[in-house]
Image (cartoon, rainbow, N blue to C red):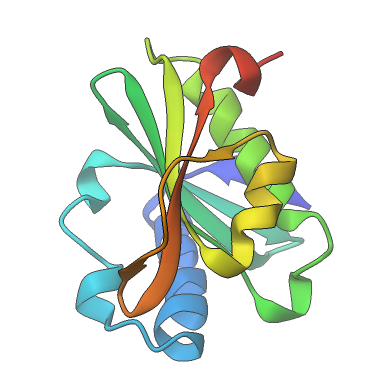
Length: 145
């Protein structure tokens, strides 16, 4: 498995293809909500199994916060550590910015995954794109120990 910071248009298209498969096709999120106004402000990531894109995510820097967004893995690759590798790469990339914490909005079904990576839940349940979520955070010190 190889996780890359997106540098080319093809890699960006590969990341978007995984996101469309997981969020739009599988979870029925409207495409106009999935591919949004923050794409050009984000650092994108794509995971490959050989040449096949199998996972994706993005990082947006907002003042002193790294906002982790759009983490997804193709169904047939889940539980194989792809999500962990994507998160490691995002957190590694985030060290290049003067941020104090990482934040994300996790689907409730993924809350335990992020808890295992050191994130703590900081909100009650809320809906985003019709899917229950919770807000989570991790201090930079915890992220890079």
